[in-house]
Image 1 (cartoon, rainbow, N blue to C red):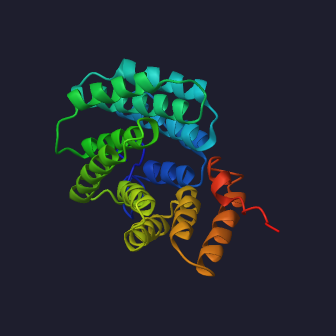
Image 2 (cartoon, helix red, strand yellow):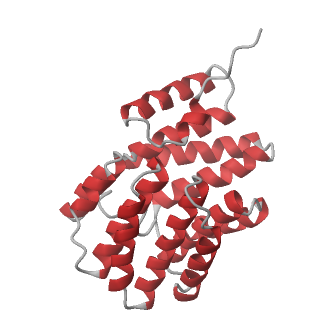
Length: 257
């Protein structure tokens, strides 16, 4: 995801050692440690650091003040349209996460920030795919507009494919599959969830593997569904209960008489 899903930055052999270290920490839910490796003295470093701390908020529901401070630093250092657009995209994501988790309703701020980002980030560039994905999240989870979400996810999916961003592809596959599952398209959902899981396992994106397992379980039949869900629980416990929102999906159904 551009700065938030830093595919290609530390995920492949030959990458910059600093990016490799950041990726390894991030993928194991150690966002604060990863952010500590980055000195926010340039716009790009400040943006990447802010993105890590914003992602921590989404996955842990904690660290809001630190993310806000890091984002303000990134916004102050941003001078080009690309940098300002990326900062606005992170601002929108932080406001989205705050609204989604019920910390504070910032839906209007999220829409406005992503709108600013759309005005600054031209179509066809890599960062636009991330922006399209996040606009899809707003449409699906805040506006409850699945058709608009699907269109945004498809644009993001095409952009991630064009720019060889496998991590973002794992997100678009998963969210498109979730919409397919809601529509009763089991085969399509199963395929999308399986692709998301495959990519995350190949990248070593451990913090995203449990959600991918749980999602695939929702589209599978027994006994495979239970096996996948149990593996998701194991990873969830290994990471100390992260992502926090996965607990509801992994809770076994109550026994009936």
